[in-house]
Image 1 (cartoon, rainbow, N blue to C red):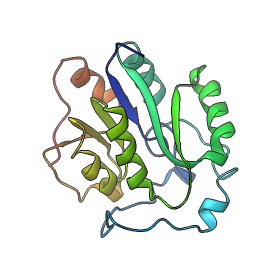
Image 2: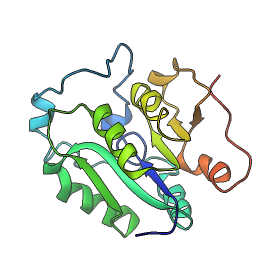
Image 3: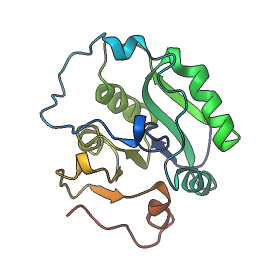
Image 4: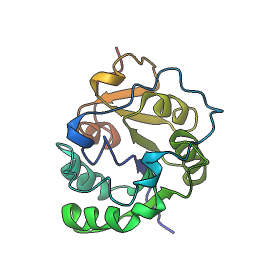
Length: 182
């Protein structure tokens, strides 16, 4: 077991660029008690993440934070995407961190991540979905929300808006925090 404090990262929209560089979720009107859905997206898990590049500043920020923290990845990608996901990390980071993927479609992405942060007890979580970020903030001291146009509506004192993971390094290293949500 690691002596270093744990921080967790969402993958798509935080470390890895979403399809066509467009963040798809607004996170409005989502319910915490929603049921998971077995749909076309779930059935294409094994290959729909091909060809994704890292987000700007993600690799550098992840590597810097890995020097101080135990960095773990919480992705709503399904287990069937594990090989592809691990290859992505080997290609861009040269290593594979501890990765937690959603075991089935029955749990929503947000439900999975909330369950995992409760189990792992991270000091901070990096997220791009506002619904998930607000819910995770109930259990984590800091949530860094990647600044996407589709999540700019969310305002909460528990969230820190960042453009890239590297923006959070000063805050997590004891320096000045990034700007709060406006």
